[in-house]
Image (cartoon, rainbow, N blue to C red; front, side):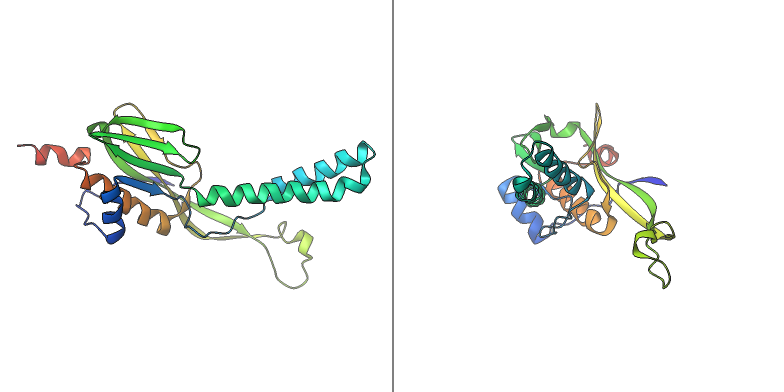
Length: 203
């Protein structure tokens, strides 16, 4: 189930929001700072491929060190990515600039062309390993059980021309909701209003 949510009520500024306002910059982290990077299948597969390549070219003695260095480099890259904000919002006069963690510009537009900041929420059910007795570790996934429903979200910016998700993946709704509120407070502090409130605020 997909759901878009944008509360119309005015939000107050927290201390974190005030700090961002003074600097004119808001850094959005898709995951909480301090999250440990998880080593998935891809880095392990790449490391194994490197080791196999060294074996093929008859450099077996260097295969394990090369695989270890590759895995370490991929782990360090993942850790560095987590340390950088997913997106950075900065005010330049009456215009809003948004760049990603690689400093690539995502948006640069007058603030009033930003119509809404929304939550794109989906309800998912993860398959959990079956850790019951009698099931071998290698076959737990085959005997997995569907877990309880969980909401995951991402922040989407709606402009007059496009809808821009600030992350490809959806994260825990509880954390995303907090960032969602902080981002809206930051924008409001610079005079932004959601499209639905503009007619009421007009003189």
